[in-house]
Figure (cartoon, one colour):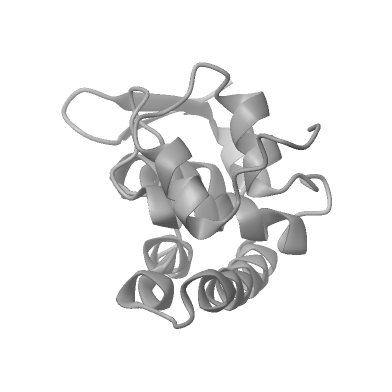
Length: 148
């Protein structure tokens, strides 16, 4: 078995089996999926904020570029999570609005993820994330009164 070392940043490396990498080169499907996800993100953003913002127009563009550059999908996904402000890192998220919109629109493009943003948040982060609860309340997505 041949192992490939992929340097993500100064502190993190990823070691992957070459056969695993071969299976993760399905760019056409990943590109189509990411484009559909971006459309859903912009639709949900428009519904919640009343307009599309730069955040929506640029959502997941880095992931598209990684796929176009030929980076394996598993590596592109991990790199995207490391550099994107809407992904949770160390129990914090720099852009809670984008994270919430991402969670809310997932059910429109991911058949295996049919939770709304509130359900996803409560199930995935039971201890909470700073600023997310208040942001969800401002967006009208906090469903504390209803059963999850």
